[in-house]
Figure 1 (cartoon, rainbow over the protein chains, first blue to last red):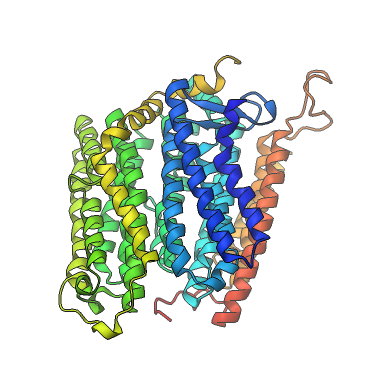
Figure 2 (figure 1 turned 135 degrees about the vertical axis):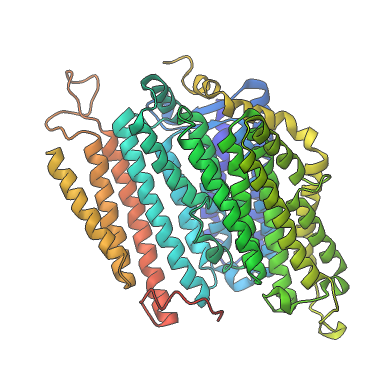
Length: 495
Length: 112
C-alpha cells in the first residue's frame, strides 16, 4: 500500500536511533548517518506533501484496523508542513552540533536521543488518535529530559528537575482530560470524536474538558503557562537549546490548533475567547521578559514566548486568513528561532560572556556573524523581504476581519518589542568598540557559521518564495477551517 | 462501586498533591507516582466497571466489556514507570552534584 510512506517520518528516526546506539565509539559514522537520516526525512516529507496536493489527505490504519477502531496516522498539509520544517531545522542544528557539542558528549548517545526526539515530534504531528498523541508526546519528552541534562552542569540539573516535574504534571492532566473525554464520547479517534461532539453538541461538560486540554497543551506550548520555559531553554548546550526553541513549543501549538479547529470548535465564545486572552497576556509578559533581562539566552527564550502568543492569536481569531497566517508564522518561527538560539550560543562561545552589556563590537571581529544577526533581527520583527512578514500581515488581516482590535494592537506592539529587544543586543554586543584584540580572537569555525547561514538563506527564501509555499499553506488552512474535510478523509467510506 | 473508586481517586490525588508541594525532592517524585496511580484508576472508572463479561464483540452475547481502558492504562503505566525511573536517577545525580535535595535550595538564580 502506498500510504505506508506516511509512517516513515516516525519509524526511520527510531530505527536509526536504535542502530546508532551500537555505533557508540564511531562518532563520524554517527554524524553522517544522523544527518543523512534527517535529510532523507525532509525529502520524504516533500514527497508526501506533494502527494497530498494531488490525492487529498492520506491515512494509514495500523494493522488494518479501520477507523474508528484502530490507531491511525493521518497526513494532511498542516501536519506535513510541520514535519518538513522540523526535519530541515533538525538537520541544520545537527550540523551545528558536529563542531560544538564535543566528542565526549557525542559518545554519550547524543545523536540517538536527537533522533528519538524527532520521532516523537513527527509522531505527534502525524497521529490521528488522541491517546497516540499522548504516547508520542511522552516519547518526545523523555528524549528531551535526557537532552536537557546533557553535560550535567549544575544549572542544567537544577532546571531539568523543574522541567521534568512540570511536564509529568502536564502529562497527568493530559491523561485526566483523555479519560473524561473517553468517558463522555467513548472514542479516541480524533475525527470520530469530532463527529460525536458535533452530533451531541458541545455542552458545558465537553467545554470543560476542552479547557482541560487547553491547559495541557498550553503548558507544552508555553502559552501563558510558560514560567518553566526561559529557565530550561537557556541551560542546555546551544545546539540542543536551538532544537528545543524551534521544535518543542511548536508541538504544543500544533496540538492546540488540531484540537480547537477539529474537535472543540462549537463554543468559540468560551474557548477561543479564553485562548485570545491567554495569548494577549502571553504577549505582554513575554515582551516584559524580553526587555528586562541582559542574558542573551534568556532574551532568546522570551522571544520564543512572544512568538507563541502571536501564533495563538491566529487561532483565537480563527478566520481562514488568520489561520493561514499562523501556519506561515509557525514555519518562519521554527527557522528564525533556531537561528536566533544558534547565534546567541555562538556569541557566548566567542566571547565567553553571557550578558549583552559585557560584549561589544563583534561585527568588527566577525563581520559575517554580525550580518547574520541583522538578518534574524529583521526576520523576527517582520520586515518585508524576510519570512516573518507574510505571517504577520495575514494574522493582522484576520484580526481586523473579525474585529479583534485589542489582539491586533498587542500583536503589532509585540513586533516592535521584539525588534527593540534584538536591536538592544545588536547595539550593545555587535556594534561598538571591539573588546577582543586580534590575537585573542577565538576563530569562528565554519561548522558554526555555515548552519546559521543556511537558516539565514531559509528565512530569506521563505520571505521571497512565499508564493511557492502558498498552495500548501492555503490547503492546510482550508483543512483546518473545514473539519468535514478531515473527518471524511478518515471516516469516509466505512462509517 | 464507582463511587468508592472515585473517593479512592480523590484521596490519592489529595495525598499526591500534598507530597508534590513539599520541599523534599524524593517526596515530589513519590507524589508524581501516586498521581499516576490515581489517573489509571480514573481511566478504569471512565470505561465503566463491569464484571463477568468478555471483551469480545462477536463471540459472546450482548453485554461485553470494553477492553480499551485496560490497554490505555497498560501504556500509561509503562510510560510513568519509565519517567519515574528517569527522574529518580536525575534526582540522585542532582543530589550528588549540588549536594541538596531541598527544592528551595535548588531554586538559585546565580550562574555557576
